Image (cartoon, chains in turn orange, purple):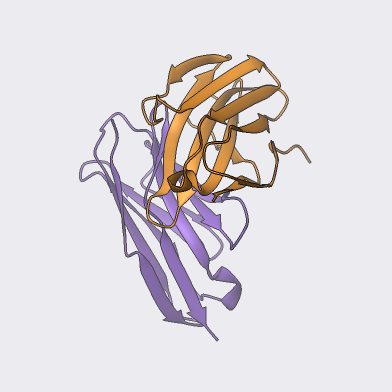
Length: 116
Length: 109
């Protein structure tokens, strides 16, 4: 059963510290999304990659957030420095390479981040 | 970009009743409309989807309707069961997925 894998599942950190979240998309999926979920904002799109290239990161606070895909099996989302308002669940989702436009996005289990 | 609005934010029904959740979208280029169910502490998972060339789709107790002219689509759950209790998200996609704000459905036994 192929799944999107995210690590860590939970992270508690102090304000000002760097946080790195990782995502392993399903093998063969070439499109990756990062979402942030809070009680107030629902699922908020942060960044979008296709074939490892960032296509859109307009939803991401540029001063502290960065997203990369160093290779096809790894996507990272980094926050530096972290702030309490960054506390949320961060989801990664991926799509298959030949799925075309009308294809389901598969979600990882999420990383629950708490910044104290 | 796309703007997806979802209503209601919370919905409480009696077991066996029907539940309807509605979404509107703004980008006429959107051509794929999935619905996700998220149980507490878990990942969103697809329950049904509809493409822009179809007006209605049904899968057992779940159905989705799409009105492209009016830019709205709806999720219908019939004969609700307590295990249907969860948060439901609609989404619209052209390139990126834009999600609605979610509906918390509570099915009372």
